[in-house]
Length: 176
Image (cartoon, rainbow, N blue to C red; front, side):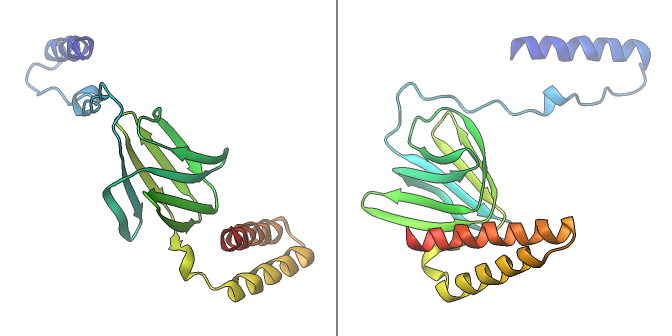
């Protein structure tokens, strides 16, 4: 942080020489917040925040573990996990508290795992797995598979493929 303060003061001095009657603008470094400290010991719990565009599903909840559907594969996050950013793909987000496991189907998003055992999970859409209607999933999968077979433009093929991928992931969520 000391190096950044020196860089800021150098800028301010140069600014005052060029425009002595104007206040110097804020620099990006002056707007940044310091990172939270990394604990000396690994905490026993992981603090999870799970948010959607329209609500906060989980806020500052201490849990044992979360498993996120990252584009690189299922990623288990425990207390003390290395800082990571992971893109989410359609799949199941599992929140583990002792013997209780709460599962959500997420469409996409990001997981931000911080070195201080806080995980911020941001999803575009999510629904508890126990609220998914299996019959609608099967119908959607059949409909999008038919659309994929009859698609004639690249756009139609891409839209149908996304529908097949999401409904296949929903189907897998229901059978796991």
